[in-house]
Length: 309
Image (cartoon, rainbow, N blue to C red; front, side, top):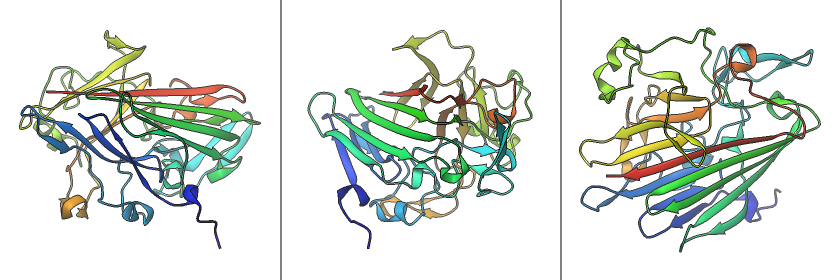
């Protein structure tokens, strides 16, 4: 019988600074709810998810709010070669390998290495050790994710991983052709503010594409300003800052009748997902920024979620 100690049980932890109230589970280091005020000061939850940890542990959440890994999104046909060695990964989203395989970081119970629930700058630190060969990836990895409420309406996520013994790829997305194309004059152009729904009918099921973060002139704490998202009804604004080279823009195209919090039913396009990342399938595209982390090197990835009205 498995040891049901605290670290082996899926739980939900809270961070509350009086303005933001966030719930995060050690199962997949998953944000289960995030309450922020609107223009009238009324606090509401802005993330899709479930009322308890059980549906996540039962696999009912289509990657809601979690940290995925070792590699985000798709690796073409689950194959790559590194230092002359060929590797084969689980094909869990045929014909490709998705979000780290059958049991990626999103389906692991992380250790809680530190937690300050409230007061000034509440935080939680999650740690996970990924063994050499896990889900077919070479090299052991010590992974750490820290969520911090850095100001009244800002949440910061710092991710680090140190690799041992081998090298391993990290973070990439939906199998691209290798081309990098301009968005101007296409339905993908969000360089000026426009409603997401305006052109969504022109892109098949919806948006599920990697954007190259190459033109931002705004920086904060060494991070690039990647996205400004505004909700007309509540006047909430989300500014997202990151040090990743790419951003997957996904409009919940495969969400289909998921019964979530308060019995709300989430259908197609019920939410927007902004996933900071290396480029998709970068391990197989030499012209993309490298996603290989060598033994002893440190991988660092930070996201800053800044809410305002």
